[in-house]
Amino acid sequence: MAAIKIINGYPFTAFKQEKILVEESHVKSKNFLESMLKRRSVRYFSNKPVSKDIIQNILVVANSAPSGANKQPWIFCAIQNSGLKKQIRVAAEKEEYESYHGRMPEEWLKDLAPLQTDWKKPFLEIAPWLIVVFKKSYDINEEGKKSTNYYVQESAGIATGFLIAAIHAAGLCTLTHTPSPMNFLSKLLNRPPNEKPFLLLPVGYAAGDCVVPVLKKKTLEDVSVYY
Ligand code: IYR
Figure 1 (cartoon, rainbow, N blue to C red):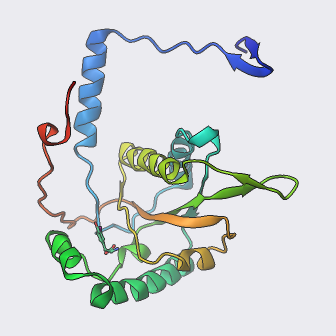
Figure 2 (cartoon, protein in one colour):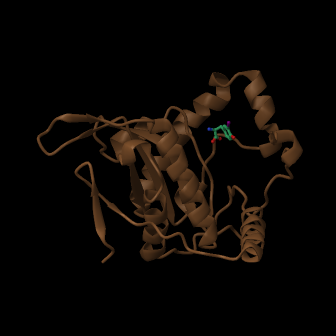
Figure 3 (cartoon, rainbow, N blue to C red):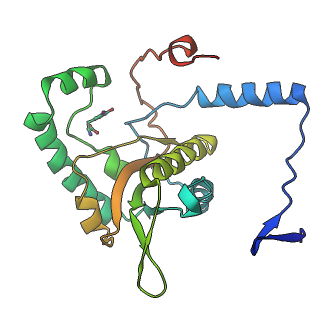
């Protein structure tokens, strides 16, 4: 066990950064870049099963994300049960139908046209797993008292980014799906009031005949400034 050093009453331990050569750094950053550029949001899934231990590995990565005061203000619900997936699909489609038929303004619908999305969400039943990320505005401690969480939105967003990268690294696909409003997820998954749905991610393999839209990303020049 690494030595513990006490600073103002709190335990610290030496952090020895894994040493890699500068050349190796170039290669590793390039390899990671090339892998991440192959990621696409997928709406057509295969029903091929994915084992629970892969999902667990992915969730361990997400749970390692940095968070405000290390509070980890998140809960990941991993759903495999087909009855529950069906209930989620039915409830999501009900909301999405309303969104696509009046709740979303013209400009929004126009912006979505290149993606050709609609209110139908069969992937919610077809994908072998759904992961619902809940953000926790506060925690309830052992004495039943509320304890505040900080930067909840940022923390949940970072954890979800880790989750998406881990899903991709496992050779799987996902979609950041945001049925709106999402409160039906709290009811169906029986979550307490301090947890609010953040994102719904179907996880699995892309269908053999999956298509994705041809999208143009902004260039690095468009999105970066050096000082
Ligand atoms: N929630 C809807 C609409 C939607 C909104 C955005 I912003 C997208 O990038 C994609 C879809 C849906 O999931 O279809």
